[in-house]
Image 1: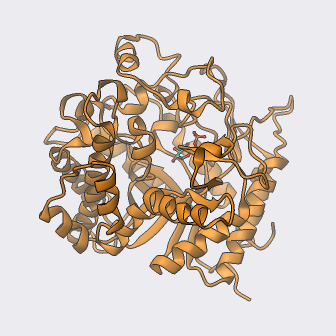
Image 2: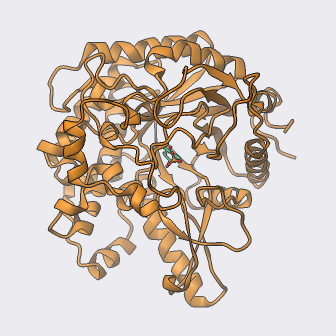
Length: 485
Ligand code: BG6
């Protein structure tokens, strides 16, 4: 019977814009995340409201002097505490740490010709610290972190001009960290732009008087080309570097076995998941997109040069975030809805959901791993998995989180089943290995970590780090290579 491979990467994941803080230190420019306020009056499960960001809010953010209501500006202060945090990761036994480089820390406005040395030096220091403990970095180049200047003054991802700045940034970090970073991920959840245009590409619905859908798909197209450009640059600069691609995996089941519902599932899977991975792993925009563009009256500019870059620079591995599964049908109006990661989803009566409405489905992980393996036969990384929950800090600084252990354990068990099915899974990363600011709701109380950070939704707290019960559990899991759960 197969087990996890000996060199399996047991990991933990974070993103610069959710943990670094220091938004105006070290020469860093403004980024998308710096501009989105925490809105405590919104319901946790009202995904639509939570995700809506208007141009007006952006203007208010520019005018805002304090930082209290913009939690991504201070994060969990990883920028100043990375040594302490990495030491804890080493104690945990992490084999790999997923982090992102903040683009505006390297090129504050995105357009500069010369990078910001202070920003580059910060990541040198972080990599040195990881090397000290033998922790392999997994580095995202853009985790919802496009410099704001590019969005406000250069039309963001809507035009190919951004590819010039992107390539400059990518070349800079590939050269600087050559030999230190092997695993590079150009974009976090590249399919997010369609669902949360603000987060993925800095698009605001209220100023988009033209066809908004058209803008979203045009942005996504340039992001796909940008992913391939990163591979092209890596081949030239550091042939040992491996470039991946990643989606938020919307594992979708038909609501019934009615053929119409089953067919709708195939279409949803194509448009919401496979369009991205087919393009980046098979090197060709899939034919079903022609029909999609036509039926939606979309006229996406795709040059021959774009097609050439995509076909010559396919990704080395595929990755996805997996939190939940969802349900679809030919008539989605009839479906009862729930919240999910990035989209409002059809509810599955057989599954329980978290407080935020995300439906827990460990078997869906095995199911999706088999699907992805059968389709591409490329190494797979689960770059995010975890449970967002409210934790209680006890007087003695302990945190008892059996619900998180249950969630993680059941998913790892199903991942092992997939390994036994023959799927080549290379690594598994707990999202928010240390508590950080929520991407969707900007609150602190939606915690994922096995390490607790003493900070509340308003930025108050000592920022001290404490080990949750899940810390010892994951430590044991890693030490036994996933066999002692
Ligand atoms: C993923 C993102 O979609 O989900 C992360 O890549 C995010 O950035 C994670 O934090 C969990 O979402 P949330 O909204 O609970 O923080």
